[in-house]
Image 1 (cartoon, rainbow, N blue to C red):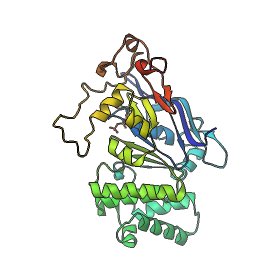
Image 2 (image 1 turned 30 degrees about the vertical axis):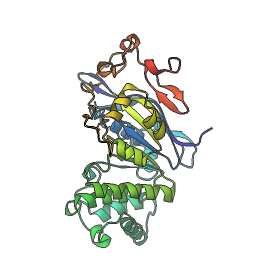
Image 3 (image 1 turned 135 degrees about the horizontal axis):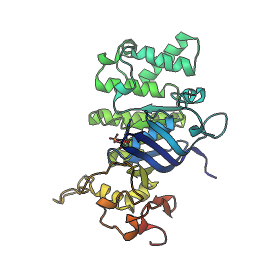
Length: 334
Ligand SMILES: Nc1ncnc2c1ncn2[C@@H]1O[C@H](COP(=O)(O)OP(=O)(O)OP(=O)(O)O)[C@@H](O)[C@H]1O
């Protein structure tokens, strides 16, 4: 049996709104080994961030995890199902920021404006690692700020977030997320707001820490290029569901789901001299509010068949660890 650090099985996270049930994450399944990176990709609103927050149990009200399992196997107690713990339970507070950390696209989402970088990092270290020894905790924080190449770490330790540039804030947030050497790092569009040189430094940093302490990474992005560089495997999401998953090599070389094929065609290829316009997927992503029992991609798909209008396809294995959710490309059809 594979040794997974995380298995997300049939996860359902819904928002009960006045207008109906918004099925933000609906039957999401993927898994992650130690030291492995999974890229989660898909258009805006497809449920990437809600999936991440479901794992950390930080989904905003009125969102609730209403089904499935999140099996975590990184602690001393063997495999535990995070769905069984209340979001504010002692167990979840112990895991968050220690076993599982998250970095966001917008650093201000996780840095508090009224505390210095040092105060915030010290708190993370003193809650989870060193309870009393302030001097030792400060040393750990400063050495992490140096690791993330923060300029003048001693001075930045005493700075407030608004005194730092965007790139420095991002480094501070990454330092905070990594200071307790998490087993799993969830990176939600961590570099989109940064210029390309800083982007490359940040992805290099994540890779460095991954190999140094065997960290697993869930990398959420819109950018196929980043996935190609960072990830071992990929889960393509559409309308709250994984529509295709597999190794990066398999999915990039042999994309099967019509949505994945279109996504890849919409990616610029370096050195491609043709004057053809890049592919744009027609239509928009619908809002998953009380969605009918049909394929969510039906309205934008060129390969639609009768079944797509009346049933939700299931995620089916079509090759070694390569899964697709499409009636046309199920194993029996291929
Ligand atoms: N607090 C909330 N209340 C109601 N609906 C929400 C809330 N948060 C997210 N949603 C809805 O859940 C769905 C999934 O949102 P999510 O933020 O996970 O998308 P995403 O794929 O991460 O998008 P982006 O790439 O833009 O960050 C969307 O339809 C969104 O409108």
